[in-house]
Amino acid sequence: MQKPYENFTHTFAGNPLDRSQHLRRDEQTITALAASGAAKYLPFNKLKVATLATGALHWCALAHLPEQAADPVFLGTLDDTPHFAVNLSLDDTDSASNDFTFTDCRVAASTLSVAEAGIVSQARALLDWHKRNPYCAQCAQPTRMGRGGLVRHCDQCARHIFPRTDPVAIMLVQDALDGDRCLLGKSQGRMATSNFYSALAGFVDQGESLEEAVRREVFEEAGIRVGNVNYHSSQPWPFPSSLMIGCQGIALDHDIVIDPTEMADVAWFSRAEARAGLEGTNPDLRVPGPQAIAHHLIKTWAYAK
Image 1 (tube, rainbow, N blue to C red):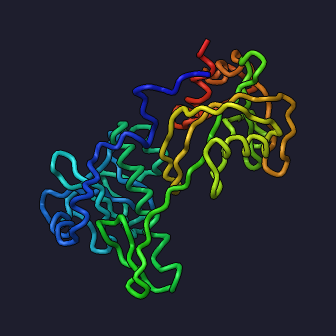
Image 2: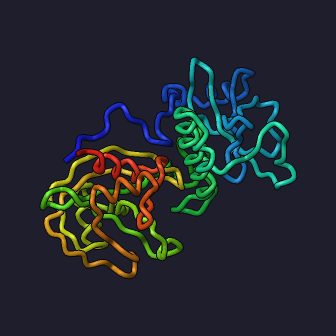
Image 3: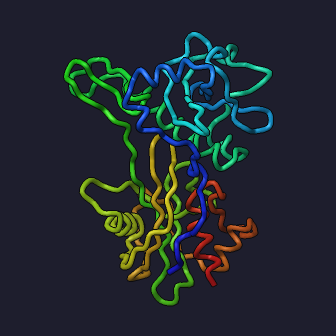
């Protein structure tokens, strides 16, 4: 098995902001920071992020935000400067600007620095969570933002609602014979008839360890039993709120039996085939690009020898 990456940062990780938990405990402090002239705001519209023509993020002052902006979410501080994200509700005409555009976050990540993409990950996940949770799930009364956006309060039943992060196990399984084949699959859906394959993945169930999730998902999708499981690396994926937990596994058998309701195909690929897929020279295999953790799981294994 290969060792996990060292000193490697995935896209949407690498957030440089100090999340400043000590400041969040005082609502008056957060309010004062938000109103200060030093505060920097990152506008979103319909969960698209404001970017400049250079591809970098567009930060602005409070005075430059439209009146219909939602309550700002406190992201943290950098060099003592408070940073906020704010979701706008603009139509396409109102959102037009000669200075910046609103860009899909996945598209924006291809031009952003590692640090900026990490900030976008935090901001988008929080803004989306607030948009989805305006009411209390217990009493159906409206909730309000607290601690700079890190919690929502229900005054009716005194509940505190916190943002959720959904763990996803994503794994690169190699065969136990000589380790020179890896298991890749493609899901049913729009890519079912393509040559696009990726690492197998699935949500971690309740009361389940990460290792158990890896073994269950591989068996459910491919009929392959997995023995040893090692951790590789992890990647925030704010669409809407997943944490991709990359693992490597050793197969205990090699006869594939797919679940046709979920998977269009699962197959073994040699190291040479995987390398060609990564390099874009394999007509029978396309793999995810460098923005995805699956790319790096495959790459770690493919170039290990």
